[in-house]
Amino acid sequence: MSRPAARTGTRPRTFALPPWLAHALRAQRGPVPWSAVVRGALAAGPLLLAAVLLDRTSLGVVAAIAAMLAGINDRPGSRRASVRRLGVPALAGAGGLLVGTYAGEHVGAVALTVLLTGIGLFAGGISAIGPVASGAGTQLLVASAIGAGMPVPEAGWLRALAYLAGAGWLIALRLLLPTPGATAGDFRFDGERDAVAAVYDAIADLLEAAGSDDAIARRVALTAALDHAQDALAGPRLRRYASSSHERRLHAQYAAALPLGEAATALAWAGEAVTGRASEGPRRLAAAVRGSSHTGPLPAPHRSAPALRALDDALLHAADAFDQGEGSDLHTRRRTARSLLRLAFGAGGREYGLRVALCFGASAAVAQALHHARWYGQHEHWYWLPATAVFLVKPDLGPLASRVLNRAAGTVLGALLFAGFAAVLSRPEGLIALVAVSGALIPVATRHFAAQTAVVTVLVLALVMVGGEPQASAGRIGETLLACAIVLIVGHLPMPGQRGGRVQARLAAAGSAAYAYLHHVLGESRGPDPTTGPDSRATRWTLRREAYRKLAEARTSIALAAAELPALARHSEGADEVVVTLERLVDATTACAVHLDDSGRLSHRDRAQLAELLGELEHSRERTGLRLPELPHAV
Image (cartoon, rainbow, N blue to C red; front, side):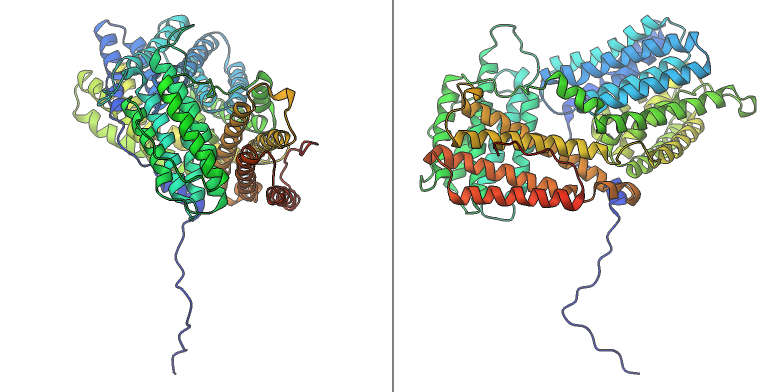
């Protein structure tokens, strides 16, 4: 028998992992955050050692837990922004510990379960607001479970103070310890300098990528850099009325980057390559920010197109702003209480809160039942089950399947490692050293959920033994696997309303921000608008920033939803197409704004592009059934 003729022009099929499994294996990359590693080593371990020496071991365990949770939130950024990023969750955790302690002492198992379920509903809802609120919700839930179940002899208010002391110690380290190599200017502002300099580098990268296939990715990177710088500058001022010269200069440098980013986005939208001379100016500005030095002469790009003329004008404005050190406060996000409540109690917040409440309440009920079941045996750590469920049910920590797989694998690995360490380490000295080493590893381990879980498992088991309890690796594995099962079941239960509420809410917010930006630019094309205030461009830049930030948040939620199991991922199908079209609309609006500044009117081509993109959005909404806000009448 002759062989069949070989096909030509075909490629062999490549095996691709399903999205939910690929996400579970993916890890973040980047340089080792040595400053955070040092802070982690100096946080939980020394606190525990001081408590043991003072014969207050139980309070030391509580303080070490708070330092550990704060260490998980200790991410790169500015010192001042870290006060809110670490402090707000710590305050929520102390409140949860206080409520959980007194509830565990004075109410029965049923009432305690109902109370914890209610806390889960509230904490889940506020977690939909943003990263800081999510961290606060996490610590509120974890601390309430610990307060209700951990056998600590001290009163609840004393436990809460110890919790605040543990988190406050890490915040103090974050504020006071200088960053290695941060020798330029005031070391207190090294995080802000790095963040603002990264914006200018991202602008240069976008200019170099204009006209290529990398332009979209570079524009997304510029959005991320601007978001990071905006957050870095959002911390409390060092002085109430008059800030330092370094602080004023950084605000001016950030404000000067906004028109540069606008011009670079317009050039990328035009799809035409620009000369390398155009990116030299932003590169020199980035170096000046990092070195806290003067810019020197900046090379001017050719003024042959509206976007290039806008780039040249923005460079001149930046050079002037760098020299004077004065600029508008354009980094602060104007978020009203109404908008925050809409996020917390809207469709996304309700679905989020209900799922967290069911998982937290169900795990607390199962743990309480096992705790009081005589046939089950000793079950002193029943709070482990609801506390573990908190990290598993949080959607912002990754897709459900990925969280469950990584949590199970990390717990088994961490428990086995600790069993080996416990067999050879002295008590308590060796275990305290193990706590310090684990604290140092947390900033590196946060790049992958399984690695983070393994390190946290070792640290928690070491704290349990230092507190005088026996080795509990087997119990830790059992509680985690049971929590995984509960979260998997609850995570796939049908909920009231439409599934994918979190994605819908983020997409609707992104659409509203994009339409608001478009409405403002079209209003500029019709002449001055008294509702925009005296500085129309500053308003425009603020609206553009908010639109891109909301789009980035929507893109992140959509990516996480797409990596869920097929039964959950199908509820957000088509959302990625909609957010890409919205991003193109904002890019086109930016190009229109630049042309408007140059000529005072919009061309027929500009209006045709906007009309085409709005038509694509309407078609996408009809095809996918996704909810988008209505266009303003003026549009």
